[in-house]
Length: 160
Image (cartoon, rainbow, N blue to C red; front, side, top):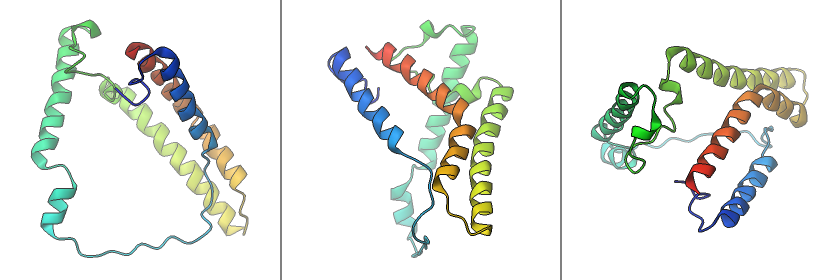
């Protein structure tokens, strides 16, 4: 369940989702006005252990994911066998087949590579054109955006 699905009624949920859509529409890929510099400080082992999931927790996540996949395979893809309070298929799309994983991973890498290459070319010629950089991102990620919107619509309909 996400923040859009917690609303008490369909109208409130729809209005809240529209707020998210407007926020996303205002985002864009652009050049930073300043150089980003990173400073590192030594982190104690205890601090690291408190900041991240423990290895045992990752094992539980992995086991839960495999358990859900096995349940679906045994049921030949019938989602009705899943307990909605215990199991969820969202996020398992990349585990459907090796081909789907490769296709999605390739799309992600291609989008990132396209934007970074375009940005590098602009810097080499002394140009700073955020609009064209944004267009590269929009064009490269079009299929992923459509898929994300479709999945969000499905999730919102299922939660109401």
